[in-house]
Length: 119
Image (tube, rainbow, N blue to C red; front, side, top):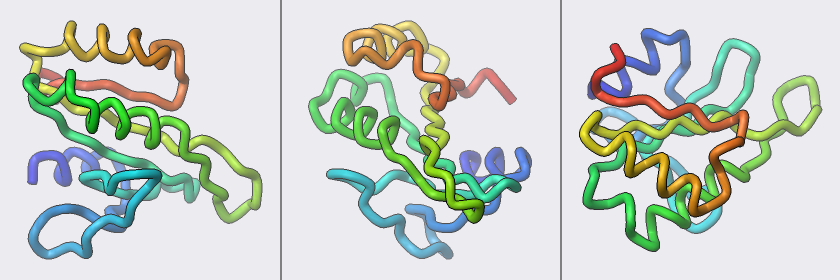
């Protein structure tokens, strides 16, 4: 729930979430994310939380690629990349950077990474 609380504290409206009391998220590419939200401009925001031991998995890499490449069309009708939040424990922040680098995603402006240290 901490993830949902942090999204809501940031002004995001939760649309779907893989948590009790919410409808399950739909697939974006090959997998469904943990959270699908909207910002106040109507832009899609995707949230994915990972543990350190999950970062090297093929499934995680597919998720990162699919979610970071997803394009949404807000109310104005202009397609824009969805904002993709990746949340990891602070102990694997460096490992996350290595995985994103391996995938060629380090310079993507639509990816926001944060850890349990960042409140």
